[in-house]
Amino acid sequence: MLPLATLLAVLALHAGLLAADLVAVQGLAREAARAAAVTDDAATRDALEQAAGRQAVRLTLDPASPRDPGALVTAEVSLLSRAFRAFGPEIWLPARASMRVEDR
Amino acid sequence: MAGPAPDGDAGGVALLMLCGGLAALMAGLLVLSAVTDAGVAAARARTAADAAALAAVSVPTIAVTSPAAPLTAGAAGGCALARDLAEANGATLTACSMPIAGAVSVEVSVRPRSPWVHRLIGDLPARAAAVLEPPR
Image 1 (cartoon, chains in turn orange, cyan):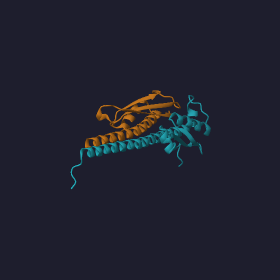
Image 2 (cartoon, chains in turn cyan, brown):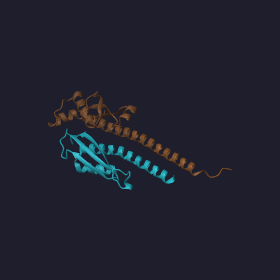
Image 3 (cartoon, chains in turn blue, brown):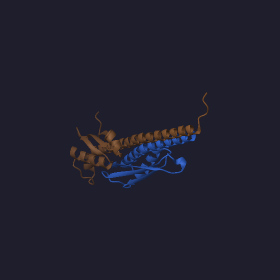
Image 4 (cartoon, helix red, strand yellow):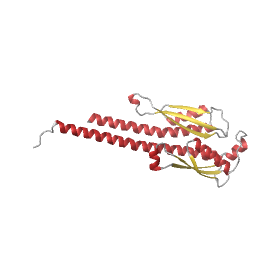
């Protein structure tokens, strides 16, 4: 019974990690969109990597900089989840957010 | 004095514990998925509210400074823009007010992805306000 109980506990732990990362990536997308609304792509990427810490992230910005003030910019962020990585599979969690480009 | 349990009894207890463990895991995962769905919807609502408020408050500035964005200044234009931004972020604008020039307050809501979570908790609301220059 002990191995089974351990397996269930590990599964529950990783499901919790996945859930936490799912919520976290929404915040990262928001940070990226906010940065993209006031800066260029390189600065946005830096801000996102800083916000993500040690976790790997992917970023796509539409449209790419330079952006016209008043236009809509959409940040699509994918976060490499910590969940289940020890077992092999890599799970990339997507999120997107849009903001209006501000005049600088 | 009781002797060791027969093999059949031990197997039955193990099976019962296995079923109990799996049922507890399934219940836990169900609760976790509901909490996650609500958490994601709340995060999306906050993003949408912020984006809507920031867009709405920038209307007069953009209308003056950017010919690429010809917008009608004032509450109607600002709130229309707020609605667009809310929708771009998967939310619905439920309230928008611009009590004074350069200040806006918006309220949005986001529907959780799972229908059963939506039936349980309804739409997730979020509010945001923005001002061009805070009152001194």
